[in-house]
Image (cartoon, rainbow, N blue to C red):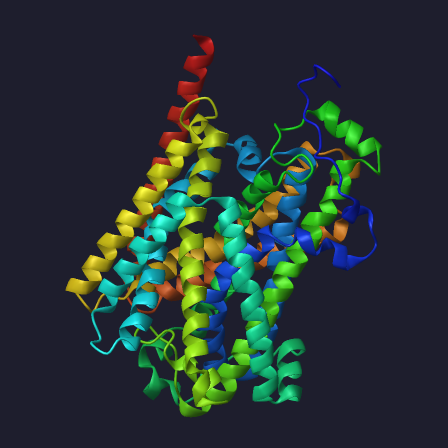
Length: 508
């Protein structure tokens, strides 16, 4: 196709033609980043917390949600591999003002990422303060660690991110599996909790041990687990962006025309279709790792923390978990410190890096010849915003100790981990049906999985928002509705303005 402007699929490695699954291990890269990012806030903190509160019976929820989220990320990634189009690009064609949904995702990310970066820094700072004899302010320690991580982010990029997270995932998987075997939990209860769904209720002792948690509806508490375990919508949308860097199939190429897609559809052995196998293996491996992490930390929380009525919370998110190793032998304490510290630093590093991908992809889709044409500048501005906002929140926490970041983040987490996941799930089959030939669309089981997942995430998100807003503050629902209405109005105005600006540039 010399002289053609049509994209060509990346040449096919021999490993993708082999039936030996071990030959696919080199393709485990983008999925390792997602798995590693969720270890810090998901498994290490909230899986342990869920195990301490609900015991082994919470495991089925983690397994079920991991399956639903796998369907989401695999469906969007295969579309990218086959067509070269990111979901943000496809969402430009939704009914209404051009780009309204991608813009909504961007405007939501703007306040969220500084809060997430600040939270991760605070967790690391709390751990650092606990380790140091002088017990300095955890927010000061967190700010120092954040400054060091920023240097790595500025000097790094996708390859550095992938290498760091692969190392973390490998070491953590090995460590937790050894710990689980040595701990020797109630294996029958573990298997029953994993595969037999049971109702989740707070234990009686929670009202005394953690009254702030006991006041929250069970829906809200478990919805936070669902939001963070396995990642959230932004993580999956960034995962699809990582495929540009990997250049699997048509990922990294211009969006394929209908003529090119028809050629791919007519050839069952086309390289682009073979590349889907890499995305499938990578996503499956990622969520298998996530399920393993969840299983181990729930078991440890149920067996070690629960009987002692100890709950990881805003004041000691990582300190209690040292018992997971020191219960086996006191000399293992340094190993826990190293593992937990490395995990949280990796999560912090990845969160900052991922914020840049969100901004780049939205602006690349909405305004490819304007703002979205200078990706390096977008990256610099995004890093500056996320980091400066995090420093400001750390300073606020240092001055006013009673600020609870988890309470601030919970509404945002419910949106990114539930509501927006529901929208992404439902839009994945829509994008396939609208833009791909029939032979390239996801099969019916995958489409059904995304449909069911979308309805579950939306329903759980709406229910959790209602309970969260109605329970602690009678006026919260009115405030939340007013804020949501304002944000939607801004999004629509911005989208209409962008559309008019695009028409003006095209006409001149």
